[in-house]
Amino acid sequence: MIKCFMFKVLPFKILLLFPFLCFSQVKSDNNLKTSLDSLIDKNVKTYYKDPKAVGLSLGIVLDGKKYFYNYGSIENGKNILPTNKTIYELGSITKTFTGIVLAQATLDKKIKLDDNLQKYLKGDYQNLAYNGKSIKIQDLSNHTSRITRIFPNLWKRAEWDSLNPYASYTKELLFEGLHEMKMDTLPGVKYTYSNMAVGILGIVLEDQYQKDYFSLVQQFILKPLEMSYTTKDLSKVDKKNIALAHNKKREVIPFWDNAIMPAIGGLRSNTFDMTKYIIANNKDVLQSIKLSHQFTFSGTEGDLGLNWFLHTTPEGYKIYEHTGGTGGSRSSVYCFPDLDSGFIILSNSLADRKGLEKELSAIIIKLNSKSK
Image (cartoon, rainbow, N blue to C red):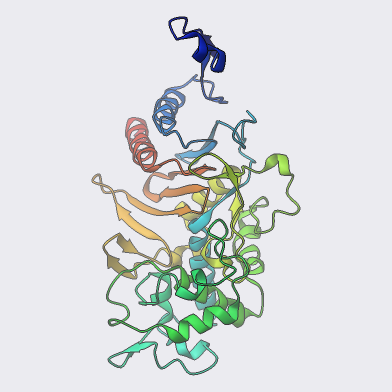
């Protein structure tokens, strides 16, 4: 529905430049037939007050049942509505997959969570200790390792591209950065989010299994859960089914390319697959998934498992969650295991989705309370 009108009171010269102003509703597949539909639409309208918003796909799980909502466009100006099969960048939600693979490695006795990281590194890293205490594998997954969030040699490179920051970064540079960093306090006692720590964890997992990261994710997660759309490589994905990333001006920018550290944010998926992921995490359908939810640390951002943030609502319900952000995409996944519910937010813009996270959480608790 498009509404247009003429501002006849404007000066004639301005009217020549801007003959009319148009206001249109955001395109959507929400049929507005149920109370859930109406609640979703109300809060998505608030989300779209952010001028950076482009496309948005939501997957809602309520008491084990799935609901999908799509808004906006896969590309600014194209008016092509996304679907539950449209692929978006997951960003750091990928780290939860890394945590599950780590859990599987412990079950396979490839790794122990309390192992010294240096056991799995080639070369001498005496700098990875503070007052005699060394970094443990577990510290990499709950952001207490004290490994620098981003090594300076990433962004100080001549090849560094702010739109695609990890492109052309090499494993040699990663470990050079690891050699050069200095510990500032004891590992395992203070939370500080670190992409580099999880990137190194991914490489350790690859080395232990002698397989690339995505093959491990496929073997241990995607195939068992029948998540056939989730991928790292977009070359085989229909371009009409990809939600392109946008900067704050709603201009199309590249997806991030991270060949050597996909464990930090290299996965792409859709709401169709991610609702399966929510249900699987709610029900702990795999022993590795269950282990990834175990408490490992209490920090400023809440409790942590293996790359999962763990919370409890005021009503006493558990939450497993993680968010993601790249140069032009934002994402959030929330699992409510006590309610067999949750949601996935996938967007192809830098619009703020924090308010939407809060409101979707409230909707899930409200509607579950009514059904009890």
